[in-house]
Each structure stands twice: as C-alpha cells, then as structure tokens.
Length: 132
Length: 121
Length: 277
Image (tube, rainbow over all chains, first blue to last red; front, side, top):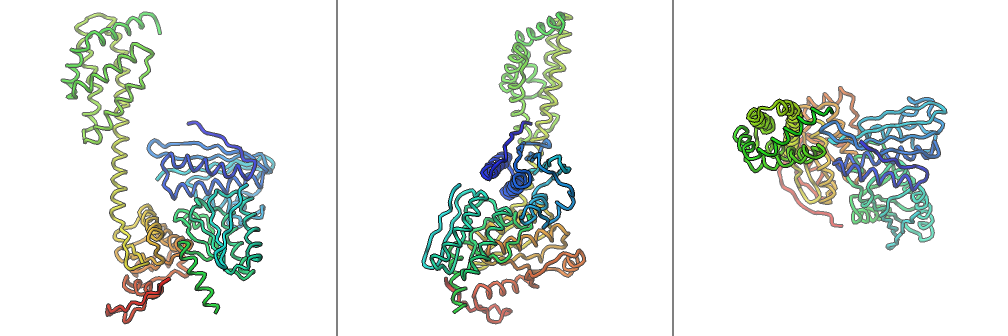
C-alpha cells in the first residue's frame, strides 16, 4: 500500500493535512461521523507536531484487513520527545498551553493508537481508523 | 491567512464561518470580534458553524473564549448550526464547550438572544 | 525457464488456440456455463498465454463472473467448477494430441488454472460477505425509526436488544433529524429495551450531550428497573440528564418545555398555546 507524505511546518499545513485526510477518508468509504473523527484527530496531532516539535510530517496511507478498508496516519517529528508518556496521555495535561486534550482526546477518536517517543529522540504517533 | 467577515444586524453581530480555519485565523477572529462588540455596542453575537466540518480543541477553545469575553463586554454569544458529526466528535474528544450557548440554526439563535434580552428587561 | 519447458508451453498454447471450438463446447458442457461467457474467458486467457502472461484481464473477467454468481445465489462449488472444468476440457484435447510435450505443458497450465480457481473462490466469498454486510445495514435502517411527535419534538422508540453499532446508528440518525426538522426536543424511549451494557449506556449518554452541544434537549423515557440498576451498578454518571417514567410523561415534559401548555397530562386533553418566534 502506498502512502503519501505531507509536511507540517506552518498553520496552513495543518489545514492541508485536514483536507487531505478528509478526502482519503471519504474515498475509502468511512461514515461521515468517522470521517469527522479522524480529521479532528489529524488536526490535533498535526498541531502537536507543530507546537511541540516546531514541525515534522505525516504519512497518509490506505490500509486494509481484507474486507475492511482503513486509514492510517503516521505523524513523526524530531522534536524534544516525551519523557512521561502516561502523563502526556492524561486528559487535561498540557505543556503547550492548550486544553490538554490533543493526545488523550485523539486517542478516543481512532481505533488504534500507537505512540513511540523518548526524550531527545522525537515522537512518532501512528493512528488507524477502520471502516465500520 | 483568510479573514472571517463580521456582519451587523441591529445590535447583533453575525459571524458565519465558511472557510477551513487555520489557527492564526482563529486568533484573529477572536480579536476582531472583541473589538467589534465594543465599537458597535453589540448586545449579542451569533457564530454560525453550519459550514464547519470539524471543531478541534483549538476551535472549541475559541468558542468558549469568545463566549466568556463577550459576556464580559455585556454581549451574549450563541453558537448555531453545529453538525451532528461535529457534536459527536466533540463529545468523544472530551470537549464540553462549557459556558457556550447553542442553538440548532441561525433563526433559533436570534430568538434565543431576544429571549435573553427580554428576560433582562 | 529451460528450453524444453518452453516447448511444452508452446505446444499447450497451440492446442489451446487451435482447438478453440471443441474445447469451448466441452468446457461449457462440463461447467454448465453459457459458451459466450466462456469464449471471453478463453480469449483473455489465450492473449495472456501467448503474450507476457499478464493475467489482469482474466482476473477481471473471473471477478465479474464470481460476483454476479454470488449475487444470483450460485453455490461456491458451482462457481469454482467453471474454472476447474477447463482442466478437464483441455486434458481431453491433450490426450487426443498424445505428445509428451503437450502433457508437460498441461501440468504447467494446470497450476495456472488452480491459481485462477482460488482467485475465483476468494472473489466469490468476498462478494458474499459484502451482501451479508449490506443486508445487516438495511436491517439496521429498518429497525430504527425516528418519529415526529409534535412540532419541534421527535422521538426514537427503541425496541429489542441494543448493541453498540445499532445504538450509534440510531443516535446519529436522531441528531440528523433534529437538524433536518429544526426540533429542539428529542425523546429516546427505551421501554422496549430489555437490557443495556456499559457501552450502550455510554452511547445514550453521549448522544444527549451531543444534542445539547447542537442546541437541543433530550429526554430518556421508559427506563426499566433492571436497566436503572445496571446503570447505577456500573457507576455510569447520568448527571443532569432528564429521565421520565413513560413516553407520555416525556412528551408532556417536552411540550411544556417548548412552550405548549398541557392540562391534566393523563387525560389526553391538550390545550395548545404554542409560543411563536
């Protein structure tokens, strides 16, 4: 399966990521609610990349379990990384001055959520949404 | 960056968001609105999000901020036209939009503001 | 590929091509498929064998054939037999030919046909799964009506066991109806629901919160004692959500809230003074 990589360097890029995710989500036949969920999650995670790492990229990829198509997004950056992942995943915890719902909230919006990070080694977040 | 136009109808300001907002536009709108409420002496603000496909935590926070800010400036804010998919997603995200009044559509939003005003006397 | 193997391939392709008519007749006879359908397949397969062995066209035709058969209710065996019976038809021609080259070529062709047969079977079962999923969705649609009770008041009477998927579908439909009809009040009646689990209770709750975000109010009515017990035991916070014992009570409540005066709720006499604007 081939993916497409988009840069995240400006506020405008976050909008472009949302639009790209929306069009691919519609293409693979996600329901309107599921489209909205994955686009919202993409928006949160893209902003995280921008705010915490100063930029990075996302790979948008169509995946499949045979019958059920899905959409996978891989956000990666070379930022400072996360030292306490459990804490970062807690509702309301923030270091960026936001509401602290970016990570914890977007995890609730997707079917699979995988976070790899260590201090000084950047962050990689992979999320997947399957068609119902 | 695109600017969201602010319309005036009587003493109500109407903001209809028709573009895909980036974070900078969100902040600009927040500032523009506060200024306009004061300069025009508006008593109510309606933010129409019928065309908005997603509300993430940043836009959600803008809505709460605008509501709190205008209340301080003696104007009530009503958010109208939220799509079902957007509402479901906000609930899942964990955003309750505390302090924000909502109505199904523009018309009901206007009625709500009039009611709030007549209650004040 | 060695040279003799090449010769074997050439020979079998020759038979396959030159004996087209008897081959097709026999193939149709064994498989029970119409000869015209098979002619297209034969054509595509021959092109692939003579050329660069690109089987895309053959697979395309087979996919179409499997899907249409799955829809028409053919059995998997019937469908797979269309492909596998080609072997028998070709073998008869190979025997008539009598050369070793042809026999060796047949072994090669046979493997290829096996692959195509498996492909057919896979497409067939995928198509069947799709049919089942579609039907389940249609059932879901049928079982979830959203009805208008009054100007500005809609209701969903839920009957039967609620699973997570069905609850989600109903709730999305309810919220959309609120927008479409401009209704500010909704009643979710669960009198006909024998039990709920945590997930379903959560979905109901989220719907009420989502409706509120949109500017509408939901009332849940007809909660059975058993369900009330479940909700309390599971520690689900129902908070400030309005609940009523019966659909009638919920309607009376919604009417009052929308500015309609209800006199003697139990005696069906309703004096209407709708608040306009």
